[in-house]
Amino acid sequence: MKKLNYLFVLALIFIGCSEDDYNSDTPSEPNPIANAIQLKNDATFGSIITDKDGNSLYFFSQDTKNTSNCSGGCINAWPVFYTETVTLDSGLDAADFGEITREDGAKQTTYKGWPLYFFANDNAAGDTNGDGVGSNWYIAKPDYSLMIAQAQLVGRDAAGNTTNLTSDFTPGDELTFYITDSRGNTLYKFANDTRDNNNFTADDFSNNGVWPIYNTDLNRLPSILNASDFGTIDVFGRTQMTFRGSPLYKFGQDAQRGDNFGVGFPSAGVWPTVNQNTEPAPEPVANAIQLAEDATFGKILTDKDGNSLYFFSQDAKGTSNCSGGCITAWPVFYTEDVTLDSGLDAADFAVITREDGAKQTTYKGWPLYFFANDATAGDTNGDGVGNNWYIAKPDYSLMIAQAQLVGRDAAGNTTNLTSDFTPGDGLTFYITDSRGNTLYKFSNDTRDTNNFTANDFSNNGVWPIYNTELVKLPSILNASDFGTIDVFGRTQMTFKGFPLYKFGQDENRGDNFGVGFPSAGVWPTVNQDTEPAPAAGLSTDTYTGY
Image (tube, rainbow, N blue to C red; front, side):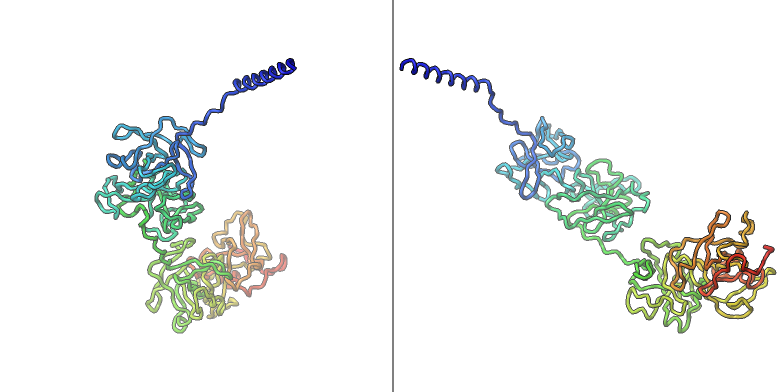
């Protein structure tokens, strides 16, 4: 019995020694050291930056130039944050942190150039009572898309002179609130822009270095700003941010964060800064001549109210042949200020003085009209009326003219000709290029065969071959009637199989002298009633001597 008790005690001693030995060989897990700068999630603000104890940090809107403008009594309310060793939570980038030496000799940690502070009235870790104080103090966040600055505006004019400006961009000293990017770089609007319209940037971005368009992803904003005030527009394939409809820019001469020289360039007020009190951008003034999209005709010309404009086929010479009762049905269009939608070229527009003394706007030489029977904007009831009136379009490849044929023979004599090319007076329909220059066929040509042009083009100056890209046609013409052929390596357009030409002696739009050269009928005009070209070998006429 004593022997069993002795063995039991030894077993207990062995077990106890084994547990002690095991525990002595396993060190206890140390508590992790908190990062000096942490990233916390706040129910109101999302991700915010704190110190190692979770105390919220703040930005001061007056600290635009990498210096602290909080001193004296300000520091009592907003103590400086500084850490010598910048250890960071995941989601923060060491490259965004720096430090400055303040005027009082103390050091201060910065984030994206903004010095960091505490707020004395935050009573516990996680408090965010300082955000929005005086519209100057904002909770420090890593994901602000934009920031608010408050600083003296110092404009630089086109001559390089600098002037202190106030919030209304007149000379004077005053701190002005304005929006910057997340790192304190000033943003501007252009005084001549309208709602969602950039009226400065060239389509090739050749002036973008002076005033670069600005855009960023809209994530978080300082609490003084409203996300609904921001939007984006497309500028020649690039995206630009807008604020209350005004496109936003930077200034190429702002070399440092906090610079705001652009408010003075080229003179004060042309490129203002923007803030929460900025008025919405004005609505764009409707252009006098607009480019509308029509379901039937594609792009058409309208006035500023969207009323359709028309061409008259009898106006081939660039003068109006609509007068008297015609004007009642087809009122004249005229605008003194030719402002145009994008896609229209000012060089295509001009003004004529009519016989009645009134002025009329022209497009590519065609006087422009309304149609009295168009009841509302967008109506196109006038197209095709009398085979004479056609909706005005910027992309006609060809046009229809109706005019007196005046042939000029080889001796230089002119004769009025009818539609069958015999002497007489009468209006004839014929096809022209888009600017009213007459097109012809050669009577000795056959289907898809040019029998006139020399292989060295030595006679091309007399009867130049004609070609254009076939885009849109007046509604009286059918695209299937047109084609192209190869003429010694050059392309020539055909109509119903006939190669098309111009006449070298037609100096002005509306001239049709070629119908008489070298004699009437050798070079007829063409229209929708022209018979198809004969097949090769069927032509019986031969003309030489050109």
